[in-house]
Length: 467
Image (cartoon, rainbow, N blue to C red):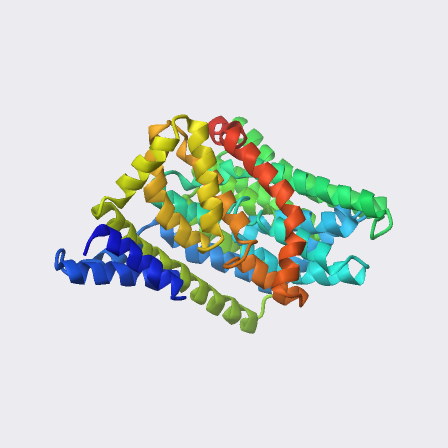
């Protein structure tokens, strides 16, 4: 069997509606059996070795942390915090939707979890306040793309493993692009509000706004205070433990709603950059933090909800890791048949400058993202595109942000957009109406993609500044 027949077989299996993981593994196995070399057991060996990776241990723990936060009632606290902070502005619940997604992104790491978790609360509230269903669905879909950009992020973990880059660097690199996306989406909400004459959805109450600002200040002051204590000679573990105890005392004394959940990404990034733990250990720390909040502090997590979160985690993890295992053998076959080399040479005939390549890569990844789940797309595209990234001297951390953002935008489009189908079900709209509702929100998302792609400093300034 020729290399061309191998690729054609994969496309035929995909076209027949077979799941992408089975199509990748099946095409590889049939090719090996037809060739007779290497032996067929190599397929199983490569699939097992593909998931035998320490960084991949972070995947189930990040999924579990997000599920525990979701079932433990944390989403309601996040929504109330966002409502107090920006609900009084024109187009208030639109802004609340985006701010809530920013906070939830620091716990879930996936766009689908954001859409299914906060989306249910947000769309219901927006429709009750008189917003049309299309606007509610559009802003929820757009804000859900923040889930994998703001750390922690499952796609970043998968990309880091295949591209051999630091997970911590990718997490840091996602913060400023996430801020840019947030500002552009909030500007879009303001434009809609001005055009349609919307006002705020709750009355201005300085007491509530002040409380939300204090929560935000505490979150930002936490790492700065630890840094100052370490500079003054206090050991890092003692400084960390002391500030955490002070934060818990403040939360108990003043009954803050969301300051402790908002701390999740701060604790993760601070722990990784300070050397307290690796990204994988950070995922375990996130689970411990989620269990502490749900079982001990808020006491909203029951045995039944814990079992539900665990079973959901097992289901999601098995799906993700099966895709990674299948993509491992598929990627190995692409390399063995020199397919990646041929594609790279073909791309280089069109791309003579880095910006040419980035433009072509964006078009390719946007197209692929409409048909493949992000994990599968990353595992297929990284072996093909990464050699060209190195050829042009593009930072692989920067390219990782560009790839993940492209694939998140692909989740909003038919025929395979998971966020699209989740929100259509939540809002009880047809897929066609949901697609049309999302289209205006492609403007801020594509603008953010252009800025992140062609201004690398947006992604790279923070990782380089923190070493």
